[in-house]
Image (cartoon, rainbow, N blue to C red):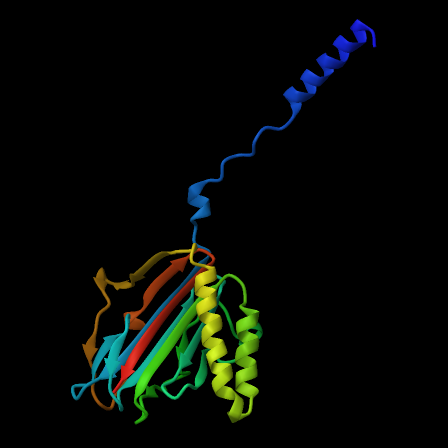
Length: 230
């Protein structure tokens, strides 16, 4: 190869190197940490002889005859699941009411009560540990849904094993998404005051939305509350 041709090829190479794209833009940390999960959540109980209305935010002790109510309102498009693991090893899908709801009645800004309407969950005489799992994600958790569907349609002899598999699946999800932290979990306010607790008349039921918390997270959120049912 002659010297002029070699010099020409080298020059062309330097030009192409100068035109090649450099590293991409650095991701904006503010965008990376932006919440794509958002919902209001409340878990209340009417307790004691005075029928005091309290917010359940952590593991606690409740007694037979006391009553529970929950509330969900989506503020962002995400999928929320509430699963109860009872003292006798039973599973209840509390929310959504059924998986068909995701296509028919599931929208932001709408109030969903658990249980539906004015009903409350009354703790029966079967004492023990009552565990409530709250899970939210940007995508449907189809494996969890499949296991819940298997449980709900199974014979009584198979339910205990299937229930344990559901609990294991929820715990595996929490481990898989450990890097996705909750961005904020704060009480809502009315007129500048934090929504609190109150006493209610025996014949009345309180408005559980008054103790709602605003939850925002990135990609995944979970919370477990265990009640020592006495």
